[in-house]
Image (tube, rainbow, N blue to C red; front, side):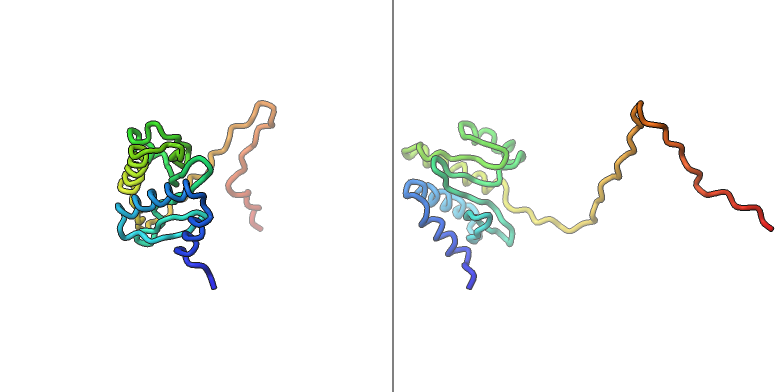
Length: 160
């Protein structure tokens, strides 16, 4: 019998150290407070939320931080002020575990809520498939022999 997303999330939380688990619970609650219709999901071996059939956000715990995924360039630009002071890489924002106190917890939860509010899942309408342009022929290098273009049609033999 396949595991449900809820049971996988529960197992993930159970295997997480207490300090990280507490931070994950706060992140999870912040996401749920913004996306009330979001459902638990489990993808790429980490917990996530699914909203209106699409994955909304992933979150995970590590030794010294918790992370939100995906952190795209558009998200970094939109939340630039809120991300100040956080370690951000190409695909994630890291919320440090060593920060303690109410202000750090509030700051992390606030960022999580903003992240979820700013970028809800987008349903893309199916449209025509745009094919890439064919590559342009490159000019010959000086050491290559010149290519002689062929005639479009071979000459026809004289009629009998």
